[in-house]
Image (cartoon, rainbow, N blue to C red; front, side, top):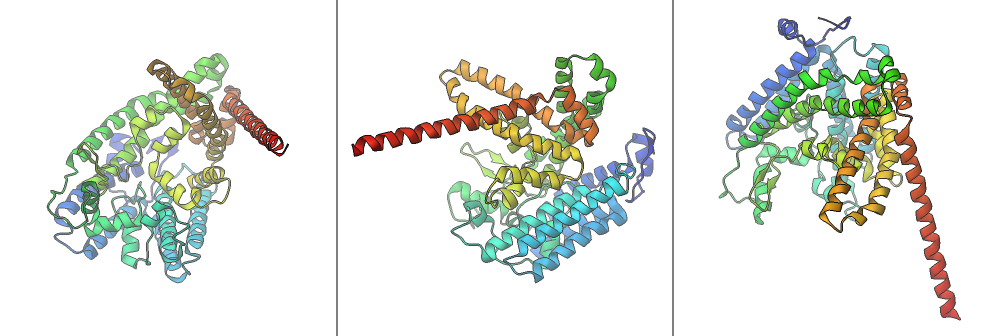
Amino acid sequence: MEQTGIKYKTTGCTWLQSVSEVVGFPLDQVNFLACQSLALLAAFWFRLYLSPQHVSPLVRHAVAALLGMSFIVFCFGWYSLHIFMLVFSCYCIMIKANADNIHRYSLMVAMGYLTICQISRAYIFSYGILSTDFSGPLMILTQKITMLAFQVHDGMCGNPGELTAEQKRLAVPSKPCLLEYLSYNLNFLSVLVGPCSSYKDYVEFIEGRHIRGRLSLANGKQSGQDSWPEPSPMRAVTHKLLVCLVCLFLFLTLTRALPIAHNIDPQFLSEASFMSRLTYAFISVQAARPKFYFAWTLSDAINNAAGYGFKGVDKNGLESWDLISNLNILGIEMATSFKTFIDNWNIQTGVWLKCVCYDRAPRNRMALTFLLSAVWHGVYPGYYFTFLTGIPITQAARIVRRNFRHHFLSSAALKLGYDVLTWAATQLAISYTVMPFLLLATEPSMRFYSSMYFHFHIISILVVISGHLVAGATKRHSYQAHHSNNNVKEN
């Protein structure tokens, strides 16, 4: 299929080539949508006919793994060997390595193999000529492999006094067997686009303890009570599928009408004013989000359709199926701080980063977490521009919030004004920060930042420097006051 002068190919199945030609989408995207549609139907069948009441956990593990592996082969053909090689290599580490080092070896091998594959696709095999991109599933697989390795390490040799409450809850006390390992990593519910979830939660789902255990917690009783009716996920699935349809419509209309590349168009940069460029950057980044919303929400709906993802019941008796959701669209669009945006975007990746890096790093936790996130995303310079830019902006946002927010809490009107102002500042900062992530290459990224006069870089760095100076002055003042009081007491 010809598109913008590039011939797109696929190493996956070509059965749907005619469909690809009719709808005008690359074959790999058609294969992906076909597999996700089939996964949704399979998820309903899995919940209704392969429920824990009807079959054993062994059968559920086997079916989930076999379906997932079939989807991988269908979408990626011989490229699927990369995925299977990583899984079996890391299982060998899981079995052979000492529990003291299992997390280190797994992280090095999984991240190393992922990076090698990303380098080969980006620079050796001219990324984009072949539209089939197996690096997406490989990225999700890297999260699962490393998260499980850290949780096995916590369960087998972690010091309980040094573990957080969440680490204790998710610790895995023994190494999984091969079938359990394959099922967790390659199950059809999340093999193509995620989300990553904890091994303990997944095993509870397979064994039929997932919903009952959370209902027990909600009712304040011991697990094992069978008198409560099991909630149906149909309302949550229907709602999420409707969201998918809206996002797909926005992608086909709004996203295509507002291309990101226009931000670096030479004519646009030379003729448009700074405010026009800033406005278009804001709008075009907003318009780029629906494709992510679509993919993640569809995957969430698939997991829910299988009965996985039940979070519990709130105090009003409302059921939540957002345990493994990857995003909160309302939280993203209404975010009034950089942190709030990050907390609601790609949520399960944030959980993974917290598990393997942020909670473990002895110092510079935020910088190391941003760096790991950049390496995990790939080797394009735009990723590193985005995450390195995010460090001072995140620090500046914290300083501003800490020093100014409390002045606007005295009345509802002041707080509303503060929220509106911080919402606008946050959304503009996000647009500025993530633009290189979408542009990928160095020259386009620098052209965009230059057109913006590096203003968010300059402002955030100045705020951080000012915050450190004020904090230092306050500390010196406190020390001098304390020292003076001690002298008075001595005299």
